[in-house]
Picture 1: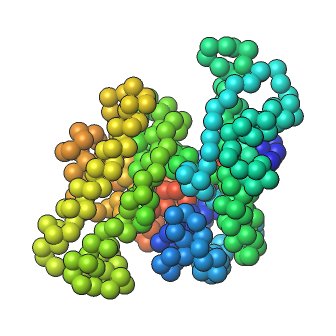
Picture 2: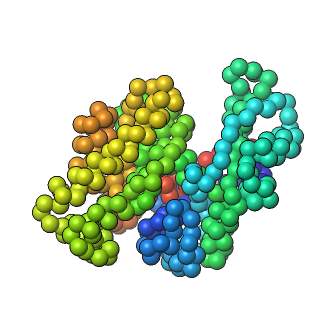
Picture 3: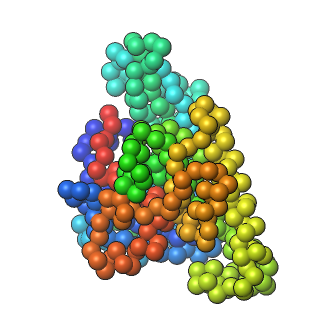
Amino acid sequence: MLSNLWKRQAPQMVGIDVGSHEVKAILLSKTADGYKILSHAAVPLKKGAVNDHEIRDSEAVVDALKQIKRVLPKSTKYAAVAVSGSAVMTKVIFMDSALSEEEMEAQIEIEADNLIPYSLDEVNIDFETLSTNRTDPSKVDVLLSACRSENIDSLSDSLDAVNLEAKVVDVEGYALGRSFDMIAGQLPDGVSDKVVALVDIGANITTFSVVEHGETTFVREQAFGGEQFTQSILSFYGMTYEQAEKAKLEGELPRNYVFEVLSPFQTQLLQQIKRTLQIYCTSSGRDKVDHIVLCGGTSKLEGMTELMVNELGVHTIIADPFQGCLHADEAIKNHLQPQISKYMLACGLALRSYSEWRT
């Protein structure tokens, strides 16, 4: 079980975010006042290589990882990656606090057999002791997680091909929540007592992570992202996919595109975010979140933060870890500043190198 690894001291790991549009990687060192970027890379993937969080073209992914490996220090051996939350089954169970870890592990296998609709031979199981149960202090709450082995193996095999070991396989929503540490300094004082929603708008998936008192309490994914924006551009203006991507990135679009394409897409995106936040509020009993932090490749759309503030009445910013506790040499910072928000998930994975490993 992966939990056996958590007894050891965490090694330095490069955080690698395998998305449907590109593979992003970041390697961090710990400093007295935060973290410093040692290496970084973002390598585009050919369309369809990764779809619905599944690797469909392993050769294309391995080629991207080879390019990333070349920019990493030769001493880098380990990586932290993540699987989609939709691929992970979780359940909080209650167990006797007096049980040893070996006894817990035996009990977990019984619980997992009841939870998982697959043979246990087909899944990777993990568990984490959370806290003492509120209603019965003699018991502890334990989070049981399970993921199809094929989802993890495809990532591990791709890393193995470039001589990197997947030391940690996380869940994307929780990795995103961990990246909150990077941008807490961007938000007003007292944010540690507030509710912050991180919204990562990727190419095909928008990932939500709500952080309360520094802990991730809610994660969710919506099948909506920047790809829909690109499709609207190419269909509206008769472009090829490559032309639409280039026009989107370089701003070479007709003058009326704001009304014809951008505004309708932003309205759809807003509806997706609003719907998910309503689900969170219903489940938590809260009226709203205190802050929203947008990140991901589609987060910097013109006027997006203003739209969120006007429509949701919630303070909204674009993630910029350089305004938080992330540092870099001047050349790296100048290069990354305009696009650093898309590295948030990779940052959250890289931070596993410096978090306490649970037992």
